Image 1 (cartoon, rainbow, N blue to C red):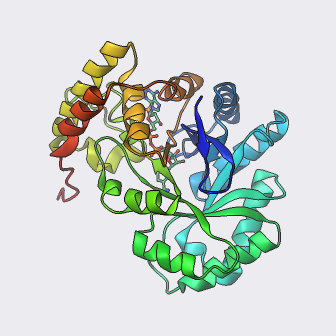
Image 2 (image 1 turned 180 degrees about the horizontal axis):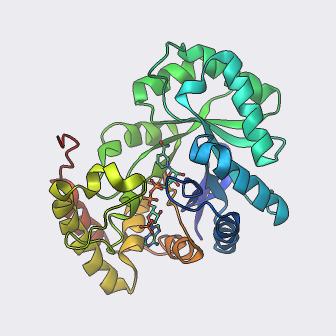
Length: 315
Ligand SMILES: NC(=O)c1ccc[n+]([C@@H]2O[C@H](COP(=O)([O-])OP(=O)(O)OC[C@H]3O[C@@H](n4cnc5c(N)ncnc54)[C@H](OP(=O)(O)O)[C@@H]3O)[C@@H](O)[C@H]2O)c1
């Protein structure tokens, strides 16, 4: 495994980490023993950051992680990154929600607490929840703060509310076929020295090569309504996947590993957090780091995806 640093904290984190939304009904890993095996394999592969959220399985993902790390005595191995949803950002709820996460995770301190998304349905002033989170750092309940799905202008506002702390990471959707993050957020993070945790780095499985326009299962999981799999988009997405398949053959790799490698080559600040439903997937995803394709191949993939437009206007 390759390592980089979490923002300017000096904390060493694996260049490819693990997403744990899979431990929920949304993705189908609802059996604790399967989640535990995924975590064991992640540790074996040198992965040391695990990303979860309060909303994943309404606490189930946090619970599985807490239980597994305790049973396996792996608490010190992993940096735990969790998230507080945009709906829980009234000051009193920030304190309540963080205590609940701490209890589910069975830890004294959460390593990275991220605001999952900016409040949209309520008028929670930015400084109200950012100051409450900073207070929890002072009280030793949180070590580092991060933001997720915040545009740079709101990131700036959130940072301006903090007095002794700063935001160390930004989390955003970023994969080889959905590259909006390159427009504003990644340049901002590079300039400011913030880590970009890339979510859906495999486009929810769309760029792994195992789904084709002729073999698009009727997903009963979270992918049912995912734009990238809509036939109108997927026929174009698959043209990029064909290039990934071709490049993968050249290096004796899997298309998913090429897709992850392409991301880490695209910015030194990007840390993909692919989700895995079993040990084989974690092992394979860890193999997205530790090697580099040629610049020519990186460019070939970039050019194949440059003109791709995923439409979300589907009705
Ligand atoms: N901040 C946010 O708002 C936000 C939003 C979404 C996700 N996230 C985080 O990002 C993480 C990853 O994103 P994601 O779960 O949306 O999607 P993803 O990582 O792009 O895709 C994960 C899915 O791809 C398939 N897969 C994974 N590894 C594979 C491999 N090596 N070979 C073949 N198939 C493989 C699996 O599904 P199948 O086997 O069923 O195809 C898996 O469930 C989440 O776990 C979560 O921690 C954050």
